[in-house]
Amino acid sequence: MLLSGSISMAALVPPVLSAGDVTLTFRPFCEEGQDECNEFDVQDPSTLKTEALKAGDILDVVIVLENPSELPVRRVRSWLSYDPETLEATNVGLAETLKSPIPGEMDIAEEEGLIKIGVLAQDGDIPSDEEIIVARVLFKVKANATGKSPIAFYDFKDDVKGHTYVASSDTTQNVLSQSLGSLVVQIDAPA
Image 1 (cartoon, rainbow, N blue to C red):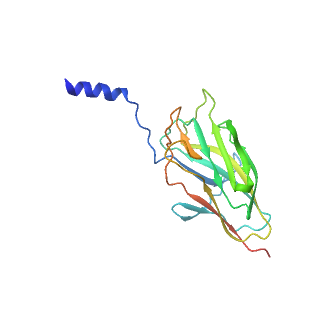
Image 2: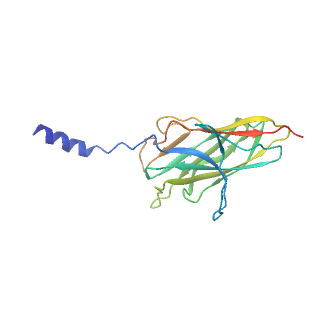
Image 3: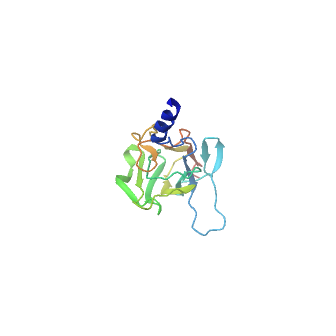
């Protein structure tokens, strides 16, 4: 009897969503319908790198949510940090899947070196795809910039109180993996 009571109670507890396989990553922008799309080179297991860029070059980056378990995605907050001395963030735009920006969170804070990206799914249209495009960001390499300049996901926390998280449906649980990588922008010295 006691065993069946325990089983009944367990059925009332909602399942814990699987964190660890949901992650955010960077990809070069690719036009829809384009036959071949570039990928960033892998520097190490948690770091991607661009080809060598020079002053004035544009870096067109897409933030991609990899969701192999196909969890429903209600909210994504994906703030980025970057070096405003070497890169100028010129534009941040929504993807079509997550259509509503969180108020004040589709913004470039150049003085702080932050790009604020926060998006919500519209009611009745909550994506659960294996891959979800979150946003598109354009950077311009500044004059006299050289070396390596990282772009990284900012302020990850285990819950939804940080500036980088993914919430499934209406939960307050962050289902995002802790192993978020970065993108190193390689900049050649001016000629």
